[in-house]
Length: 191
Image (cartoon, rainbow, N blue to C red; front, top):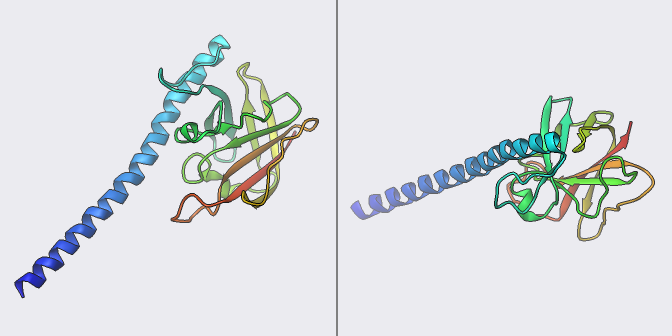
C-alpha cells in the first residue's frame, strides 16, 4: 500500500512540476516579447531623432526600421529590419525582399501569432493600420481581405507598382502546437 501511495505522490509531484514549467515558459516568452519591445521602442525614438537606424541592444543583429500603429486597439508596435527567426523572437520583422512604405510596392511584415500579431485575429475588413518610417512620415492602410495559405504549396508575392501592406502570422491562432505550415495573411490597400 505504501509503495502505491509513494508512486501516486511522485506522479502528482511530476505533473505539478511539469505544469509550472509550462507556465514559466509561457511567462518567459511573453516577458521577453514585452521587454524587447521596450528596448526596440527606445531604439526607434533614437532613430527618429537622428534619422540613423539603431540596434535595440548592442549585440542585436537587427535594427528598428518602422513603427506600426493600430488605431482599433490604440497600440504601437515596432518593426525590426528582417524577419529571420532570431528577429521574430523579439518583435515583428520586415521581410528583406519587400519594399518600404512610399516605395510603391508590397511591404511584408511578419510576427508570431501568440505575441506581437495576436491582435490580427480581432481585426476586420476596413480596419486601419498606420506605418511610420524613420522620417516619421505616416502611411495609412485599410484591410481589404484575409487569406489562409499553406507555405508548402502557396507562395506570397512581392510586387512593384501598387503599394500594399501584407501582414503574415502563423495559423491557427489558438492551437497548442506551434510550427505548422499554415499562415494567416492580412492584405491591405494604401489610403
